[in-house]
Amino acid sequence: MLVTHWTFSTTPLMLARVCRGRPCTERHGIDYIRGFRDSVTEYCDANSTASLICFSYKAHDLRTDSFCAGTLAIYRPSTSRFLLDCRLREANEDDRHNIAHPLANFPPYWSNTGPTAVLRQHVDLDLRNDSGPVRDHLEDRTLFMIQREEPIDNLWHTLMQVMSLSLSLDVLRSTLKPGTSEAMFTTRDMKRSQVVILDAYEDGPFYDLWTMYADMPPVRLSNIAHTVVGNMVIPLPGGSNPIWEGDWVDLPCNQSVLLKTFSLRVLDFYKVPTDSATHTSLTLTMIDRKTTRMLFDQDSLFTALQARFTDVTMRLVDFSQLSFREQLQIARSSDILVGVHGAGLTHAMFLKPSSSIVEILPPTLAYKGFKNMARLCGLSYSSRHGAEHEYPGKTGDWHHDEVFIEEDRFMEVMVEAITSVRARKRAQMA
Image 1 (cartoon, rainbow, N blue to C red):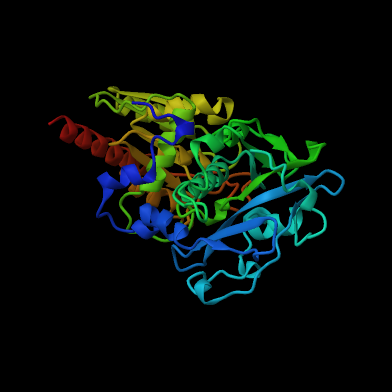
Image 2 (cartoon, one colour):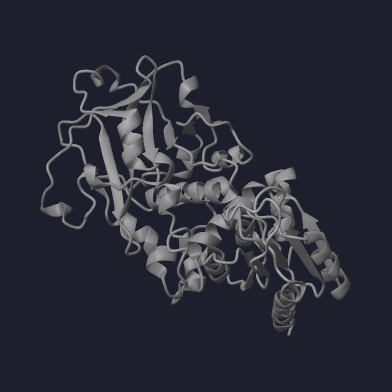
């Protein structure tokens, strides 16, 4: 059954009912949403025309993450900045739970993202003589302030940011407006929501992902030529995403309600069916990298694999040549996803239950992110490190060099993955 993306018909709370009792709920479960919700703090004093409410939560040992929502934000094209008549109040005893207070303590993030950078570069506070005349003309509009991460053609970075926006909106949907019984963000608000792209990067291949939670088309800040008045959301940055954090260590978390919810929303948005009917036949997709970290002698390895497993449907796919919807369709129809370490393996979050990931790592790379993702998605995971191998043009930088693996070790890991998926399928059909 498909979910409806803009009504949030699949929520973390719904899926939490079937994942209750799993470890790591404070980081990957519904307690993550509750932790932010319970930290809600108004930063403006009682004499301010506007409001700036921020949320902070420490889901891991690295730092406290924060995001903010403001009201009566006024964009003036003459200055290319938003005005917020918010006089920051003094901290009081009620703020003791919010360890990120004051605003100056909010941390910086990758690619100059996050509330600290957005507020500093695009928002002016405490403008008591400038915003008053528009107080009674608040547009029914919510602006999502998005500074995208580089590189914009990297699926991992884009999905981490879009998921962080999704998490921020889930917090707002579970938080009541002060003195009311209405949530801070509702389905009705989505119809009058708009992403404001703050950066000057080109659109990139995943630009339409930014329309998932806003019915109005995205607009670039540089293209706004008139005064705009509305609410403002400065979401959690991609660098704060709990799926990204801790990707160099083995995490003991076995399921993520947050990741499952988000992956279903993306599949629904692109109208990719999520039917998980079990079939005995297997489909293997091998990612065909064309620039950096290519698999050395890939064609020979793939041909040998086809000859070894004639009953498995196999395809070698260059995702960069496909639309994102086509990429999702391929991922969802795959039982085994194989690739050298890279952003293409992010498609693991869209695989069917009982599927498997095979990661071929550069010789010295100790990255654990896709192994952790497999656990969080309930998938099996197999990996092998490549071997040192000399060839003309080798740079010594694992980011760029081709990855060499002996055929017998490649076959070994593939047998491991195929056997695992077959066993899972048999168990499901028993």
